[in-house]
Length: 157
Image: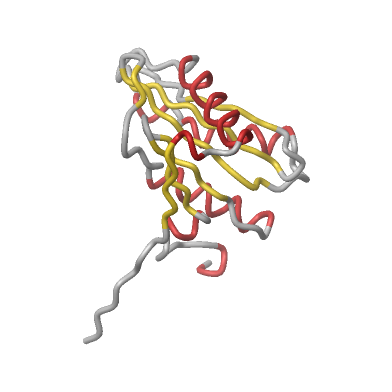
């Protein structure tokens, strides 16, 4: 038997260490979260996708009383980018969550969103940087593959 460890490199910056662009992206994700339709969980998530030409595409979670019928903010933004800008690679996604108007800490994409992020990386053959925004800090993950190291992809079919 062999055991091995999988580690994920994460860069963490305080809000005051963010670049102007990173602050703009975080602010846009907060606005998107405030516009989420989350009447059941009251957990509003906003996602901002930044394309290779710096086009910004936003998304937010959309809930439904029949829970499987809703959709996470990350997938709303990713699918919107793919539908409206199919020839532009995604370089970054910024995610923030609010509960009762307060930014939540230690958020992370669900498994389904991680799989879609990975598929988007493979589609454009470039890593997608992921920014997870907390109240005081932002965690930077260099690619979706880092969030889903034992992944299933087209090579497995």
